[in-house]
Length: 307
Image (cartoon, rainbow, N blue to C red; front, side, top):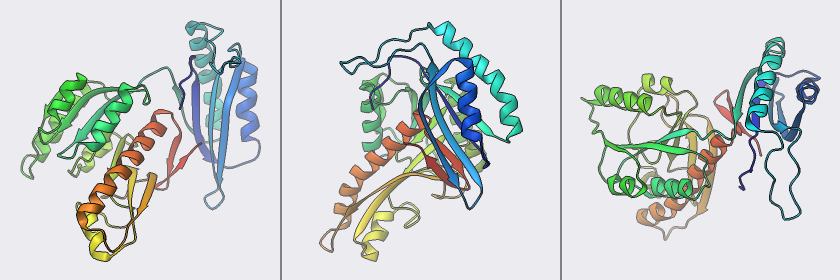
């Protein structure tokens, strides 16, 4: 996805569904002098919920030039900051009146991310390459692992690496160390890039809807540590990979993205693992990108992922 040359704000909200919600939100933005760039909404009729994503900026931002490149913002950063604060102040009572859960994010801010991995490095390597190329707008603040396999990769990218072994006896101490490091580095998003450890409920609670995992099966099938072996034993004709937010239930958090590949009776476990690595890279990268673009809302252990 091409990155904009000017800063925008993204409003994400959900609330009980009722008429007039789109008009109230768009009308307020118009009154404040904002320009809506993208707007999307979804209704869950069964639960009676409304979901909305609006991306907007100052109305003085010019349209894209004939060459396809967007110009710089017509107003300076200070003016846009004032507009954002004015919107927060005006929107807060409206959100309260309509029982909205909402968040406002600025696309110019690059979240600080921590990568967790174990012995398999394909997902971590892929994410680091995407960050380096500018495809993922974030800062990888540190890499943590219960193995040392990823240490040379972290050194190549100039990212602090911390080796924290985990055993059943040391799990609590290890997580305490991890949480301290995450706080010191002001990390906002955790990405489990094939991190083969189960996180405690207390750890998960510290980062609600901010831990993304990739699981090497098409969930809810074949949870646990050896899904390719289970898939081969079952004789399935499709294998998959799933990226999801982490909750206290193993491999059961809100699903963000999935993909599959067709296999046959000729494929052995090793073939499934090799095919699955490509799926794992893709679904994890998509999930991280959508989170960074503020496109995801979670509800009832599901997600709405806006285009």
